[in-house]
Image 1 (cartoon, helix red, strand yellow):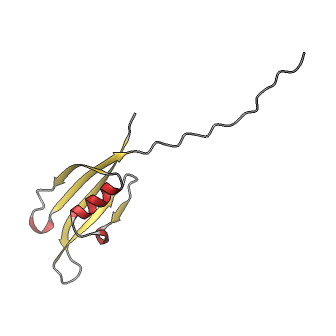
Image 2 (cartoon, helix red, strand yellow):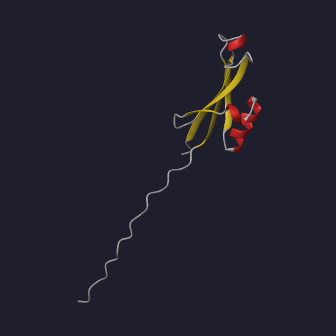
Length: 102
């Protein structure tokens, strides 16, 4: 049975820590629960989505938080990819029994 793993790319517009006013930041939420600021990898959603596609991720949905219009916009890109099968446990080699002469 094919199993999937999921990830989330979040694009957020927020107040800049400098005098620039506003900035766009991107965060990647991986299937293992980690969150990584991936803003340095690109400045558009397409750059980040293409990068994820190169890693085998497929975009399955996009959502926008309508309550955060204007300066605090928020976009979520939901992605999935086939989960790598778990490695099969190694089988122990057991010596074969030879029949003793009777």
